[in-house]
Length: 135
Image 1 (cartoon, rainbow, N blue to C red):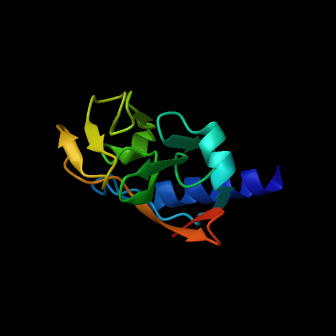
Image 2 (image 1 turned 45 degrees about the vertical axis):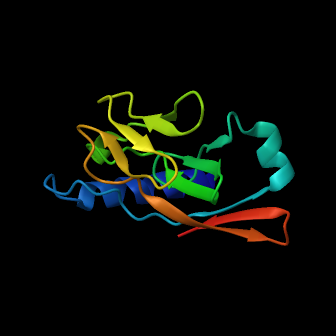
């Protein structure tokens, strides 16, 4: 409970410190681990949504090129903290607030008004059993 409260306070300070002209997703510490087995059980269409990590949660994707991890905070008006959602098929994600689309293979914008890619996090496979997401 205290960790969540501290994280929320830190997030609010970061967001309040950003000028209105800044449309960037703030830096917050991310250190999340999931087993491959848990990912396979919980993921839908190769996409796992993780709450309480990053700015607006994490979206971890299993692609043909390997695993990718993104913040769910849309890069369109990030101060609104609108959470992107994976589309059916797990190839693209949509910002429900603006209709912007992003390609989950690399986080790139695919449909206006998106012009910036999703915030990506480092993801590594440890011991062929664990996925570690960090920044």
